[in-house]
Image (cartoon, rainbow, N blue to C red; front, side, top):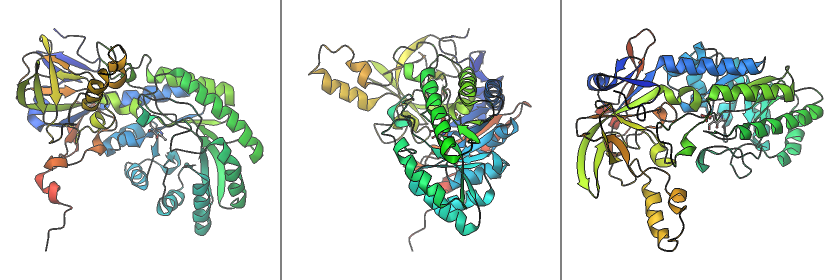
Length: 469
Ligand SMILES: Cc1ncc(COP(=O)(O)O)c(C=O)c1O
């Protein structure tokens, strides 16, 4: 029997083993080794297609540019390209990868807060759709670069809409204290620079991005209205309408399965495609059908398209619960430590068995390498003395559950799967503590299993070191 409290709608179970697209994940882990990322091509393409179709249904001229920072593996980029999406890049490296995956330049937009002259030159030379300008200083840099190349760069101005969206402070980008984009008061200077470089820069669009894992539809609505007002004003000073308005990404994924108590930031009441359909329809009303509308979803396309398979390598009985030691820690899944992100866990070879609570940690020589909020728990213990009557204190300072419900018999040798790990993981791995970065396979629609990232070898650990003479 499958415990529906535990098992994601994207994964299933057969004979007590977790499955994805009909593949036995325990057998996959044993055959390929762990830690192992497993991507579902069907889920990835389905997410991309449904998002694009919903945006197009809301607005006749919608272009969805997948935010490649979420996962820029070449197989992932090729799949979203095949589904009719463009790509958003955030560096010369991501531009290189998008081109390597066969994305055509006029479907690529380039963001970034510190673009180098070389990156700007590459973007202009390739003829991408737009460079999103982050500051007046950068606009001048683009103008000078384009002029020196004898080219005219097409740019969109990135604006800060003053709208807060996103699950945690580290992924909110739309408020006036964020490091991104231009404030309305920067616009007169940008306008003067655009006039000075009229031969080398053409302002064709506006851009904003309010944050990631934005579950509040109201934040998108406020952002859209702000952008519509700005598009009218900037169109007036340009003396012509803008060609496009880019409303960014930030659409959410459901990380919570079963009991969501206290984990609301990681939940999403509404499906990303339904949300973007409404945002696009609202933008069509505000801006009219002629202005092209761009979106940059990352997480919503790839987040729930992958699971991470890990092996339990050790167990200790300390305190009230057993502690399980996985072979994947924050070197494999940095967001678990950096922003205390919640990833649901299931013992893949014991699905349906009775559960018990466990403390779950990673293999690194570092107490922060754990899947609970070690910093928040210590802060709570310190503050509790002085605020004994504050019932909301724990929820305010401890972001993650202290324990995970896993099959009570979970033991070394078992496979623990972490769900919804497709976004902001693969390219953020690093070989700390001499731990090799994990490999990734894709479950192809054709039914086969293909490596899309080979696991590190021990030789990789020393490849870039220059031996002492
Ligand atoms: C400019 C920009 N666009 C799009 C995204 C993608 O956001 P998400 O993955 O939440 O959709 C990001 C992520 O931070 C971003 O900075």
